[in-house]
Length: 232
Length: 253
Ligand SMILES: NC(=O)c1ccc[n+]([C@@H]2O[C@H](COP(=O)([O-])OP(=O)(O)OC[C@H]3O[C@@H](n4cnc5c(N)ncnc54)[C@H](OP(=O)(O)O)[C@@H]3O)[C@@H](O)[C@H]2O)c1
Image 1 (tube, chains in turn purple, red):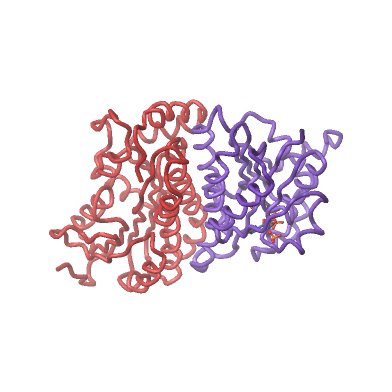
Image 2 (cartoon, chains in turn brown, yellow):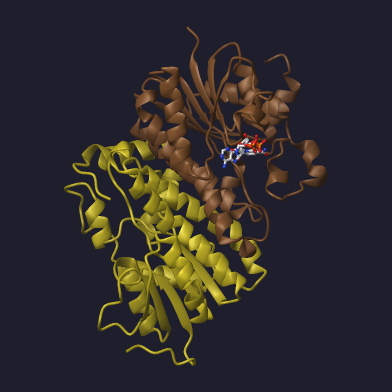
């Protein structure tokens, strides 16, 4: 039997690379905010898709729950809550609307999803995708806050659900995706040092096998991955 | 009726009507500040603080009051203190309560801080009251822990950019305090005497904020617990599960 896997934010970047990696080995339910017709060419064949715009967390969660119900999945082996977005700039000029949306789409949506998915995750694994920005990032203040929130949620839930559902938070370092451009930030020449979404997906799969509830995947691990390409 | 005279330094505190917030207000009044308290309840009748009544979980209300809060400045010291909790099994608390919690503990202080600094309404110090759970996690209050971690990360993020505008940023990490809030959420049999007196914690935190320190704990014991959480995260959170989560006999939000 193939495992049932849910990945949010699978229409681009890390989520898309992770979906491509699992395609064929797992039954996939993929979520994104774009309409199905637009998403189809991006997603692996045979994957299921559900529209879930996390700017409205409760709606996103109930759409995903409805899709799971429709598929008849009674349990999930793995849920990767990867969808995310941010705003970049001087924090004093961040509009209230952007602060609110960043918290909603990244943090409140993850809370709503963990809440809804909880009964299906018995014996399974919940993975939250954080960011190394969680330690504080002057140009991404609200995003850093939301990602730190995921860290606190995961550490606490991992202990609460111990023995029933494994909970992990994984903090990637910089990855060469469109997230920075979407946030209004140009990393410039530094982008060359970012890892590819494919390498990140490979490192994520490896991190999932780890016992630890918190993992950071940044430059030292990028380097290790670069010199061990045979470890696929 | 309390009045702002214009000669004395001004301070703003959210959630100033009771608990640690009440202690902040009393301390600042006694130290010669004019104090504005933003709270859903009015300040106690005897208090000399000016109250701006606003439910911080209500976005419309906050937006409506923003101009008045900015106009009552400029402030030498702003204390983002208001916080609510929700304790129980994660699944046992309604999602709606989690929403309120994130709005009050995280979103409102971020929206307020950004608006105040952008309007040049702070000429001194900001202090964000996070929680000691930042270093330990909090089984039985996972969303509370999330909200306080988020607030701490926001404060760390804005410390440099706000410094360029002459505003210092401090994060406070209080441990268990002897307040009504803490008593409401504590498991049965939790000892009250060992909790820190809010007035002492307030003195400690205000001192650090005025000195522009990056971080402050409520007392030496909180500092030790933070260190334990950092050095032995797994052991510490397991211990927290035993003393809190496993003993919770009710869900409170
Ligand atoms: N790239 C990095 O350097 C980096 C570093 C650390 C952590 N991360 C985290 O990794 C995750 C994936 O990011 P990425 O780099 O792959 O970025 P990305 O290429 O922009 O992909 C983000 C995904 O999330 C979706 N998404 C964004 N906002 C959404 C919303 N409101 N509702 C539903 N879906 C939404 C996007 O949809 P659309 O395709 O429609 O935009 C996309 O599918 C994010 O959580 C990000 O914070 C990234």
